[in-house]
Length: 339
Image 1 (cartoon, rainbow, N blue to C red):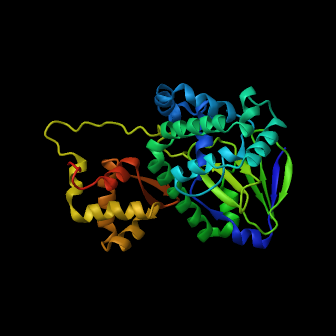
Image 2: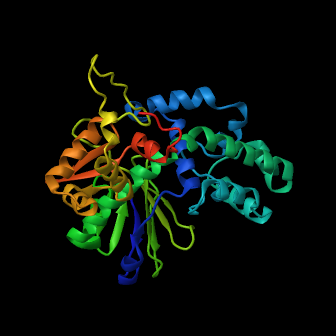
Image 3: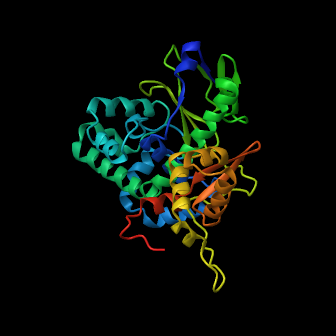
């Protein structure tokens, strides 16, 4: 049982890889929170989130369950500033709220209070307050990390296009769940949903997701084009990484901290360049900074030891991307930075 997306040449030309839409990634995080999947990667994040969520979070958890459907106005594929998108939810027309809830009700029961949502403005505002609270706990503290991981994945996809065209990209999205059988993209959905969608020249927006389940998810009603969300791969040789947890490594007495080495101008430029060009190779890094490749490799090694960047391998190429700590350091105002 698969869901099939039918492409034309025009669809292939308009297919793109985008940064995660905030509300869509938030819905993925809400669903993830309510499962026991990937404990090594998400366990610490879940424990921290569950201690911080208040009773008001229940409204969002009721409308975005671990599986099944959720109202589109809460999970839209809109791109932009998260706070601005949250405010747009507050301004959702009642007719849209009613339509989205009716669609969900066709597939699963709604919580009793949701039946009054479209006609009770105070209740809708309570739901929006709940959504804002959930965002502040689940996503806001980690948004830089999420966008950094997504940017690194986008860099990987661009390399796939350069190496083998769109055929290579579509065939590599998720070999276990997604199969490219030109001109049809076949997806094994977690729900077992079976159907066909003809893109009709609109193309497809591919969205890498940190919190996305192993199975792909698709929003066929998204504008201006359908959205396919796929989970970012974390099959590194070192094993799964724990999400949002930066291990503490105390240097031996008298040893100089790797972070102190960042005071050098060239190394700071290397970190800044990696943040601006995630998933860049050592050769590209050297060219961008204007240094020799061996020097770029040496600086990258030190930054990696300080946990400011991570290095993944694609075939024989080392690809460097910033970590949350590296991004935080770059965003720290000079007056408060301490080394």
